[in-house]
Length: 136
Image (tube, rainbow, N blue to C red; front, side):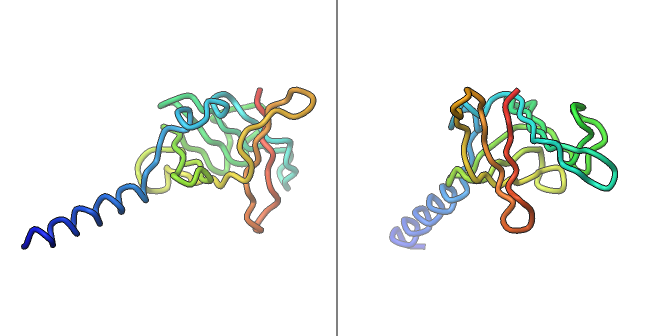
């Protein structure tokens, strides 16, 4: 392999690695750190909620869980480090690369509304309605 080919290979590897870059979400925006809950979601089995706890390595995501009950009776549940992609529009929570890792699309990053409540919005992407999350 010539020097030119090695340089091209190195440049391509750097580009590929930077395209997949993920960082801890607290390093990107510390406003994400904390406990977030959605409004009550009506289902055929009663009221449910979506929640996200962002706390370093011990972050957690629960989808359609019993109200006010973290880590219990959820349609989807995972825990692990919370990361954000390089475009800052997808929150990645969980460990490994399989079913224990959830990719949650962010429509609006955290902001404080006029009443002093912290909010960020998950993107339903046309499949469901957007889900506002409120910091507790």
